[in-house]
Structure formats: C-alpha cells, structure tokens
Amino acid sequence: MKKIISFVLLFTFGLSSCEKDDICDANTPTTPRLVITFYDSSNPTRTRNVSNLKVIGEGMEEGIVFNENAADDDETRYLTSGSTVSIPLKVNDSTVTYKFIYNAASTNLNTDVLTINYTSQNVYVSRACGFKTTFDLKPDVPFTRTDPDGDSVWMTDVQLKNPNIESENETHIEVYF
Image 1 (cartoon, rainbow, N blue to C red):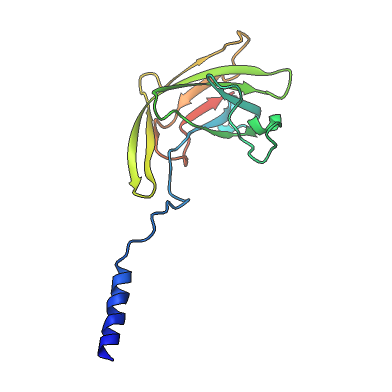
Image 2 (image 1 turned 120 degrees about the vertical axis):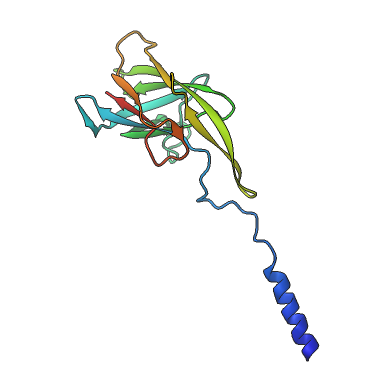
C-alpha cells in the first residue's frame, strides 16, 4: 500500500513540475501601430472626426483595411470615419510613407502625404510569443508632410505628441484640420 501511495505522490509531483504549454496569449502586447488623433483646428482641444479617410502605403494598390467585416470587393473596407486611426510601421525600415485621402468616397477628395521617420528595436516578449518591435520617432525630423496634388493641404498642422511607440494606448501624432 505504501508503495502505491509513494508512486501516486511521485507521479503527482512529477506532473506539477511540467512547464505550461507554449501558447502566446491573445492579450499579449505585440508590435504597436502608430496612433494618430485628429483635432479641430479652430478648437485645438477638441477631437474631430475625419470623414471617409483612406490611408494607402507607398507602393500599395489598396489601402489599409479598417473595416474587416466588409466584403473583399467593397470599397468601404478601406474607409474609416473617426477621430483616431492606427497605422503600421515597417519593422525592417526606418521610413514609411502614407497617403491620407480625406473624403475618399466623394469627388471632392483631398490627399496629403506623411513620411514618417523612426528607429526600431526588437524586444523579447516570451518564448511562446517571440519578439515584438517598438519604435522611436526621430526627434529632429519625425515626419514630413507634402501635398502631391498641389491643391491645398487638408492637414493644417501636424504635431508630435509622443515619440516612443511602445503601445497603442496613447496618441503619437496629432493632426489638426
């Protein structure tokens, strides 16, 4: 009887020393995106919704997907209307360029281009999750804004709020229009 109890105890303690499964929890922070918040230029303390904004990366045919529930051939898949957008940065580069198309669903659209300059650093998360990349916007010239159409810029002012991109819980760039 003592041998059976000893065996059961030894087996139980043996199982308790096993490592848990290497599964990356879905709530584990991953590589953050750049968070841009839009403000009313006539009342700078108040956020303002952008209407039918489409964001297209340099060299891309389609825009960033903001509405994943829309059909693949539905143009609204690439449009967003809100006061905040999150856009990805390239993990293996130090510059990314995006076209921001205001009122993209109408004939009265306006395009401004932001080129974002940054450095990146890989940060170890865990054995299951691997690495994530964090970014720092370059302090001397974090971004440049251009108007490719030659009409007028719809982004009247762009300001750096937080150069350290470690999470998506805060605004990194403020755009006034």
